[in-house]
Picture 1 (cartoon, rainbow, N blue to C red):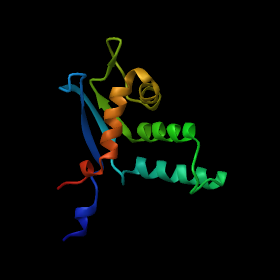
Picture 2: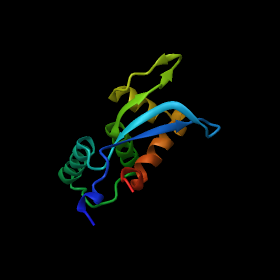
Picture 3: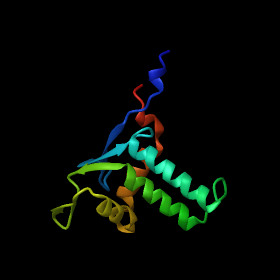
Picture 4: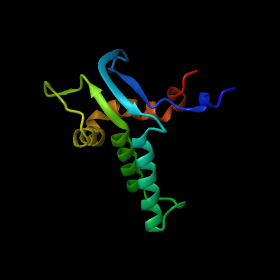
Length: 125
């Protein structure tokens, strides 16, 4: 078997489903586990824990929740057809964070979280 079979995709596209579970026209492009955005985030979080002396220890829930949002923001590279109040919502870190932090958009965030957590999606099988 070729070692390249173990190399994940750099990005994937996730089609967001509506409340009726039917695909919408919203598409989110996510960074894979070896994408530079993901690697940089992993390093920054590890360095932060090391400097705080908390590497390898349990962290408070609020800190863990913040890190999940940080990961979603870092790994959301682009989106299309995402509107808010009838206007296209630009995909930039501030807007991405606003969407993922707002409980009103938990269904959207949940689909992105599940996609990132499903490591098989990042491999061509």
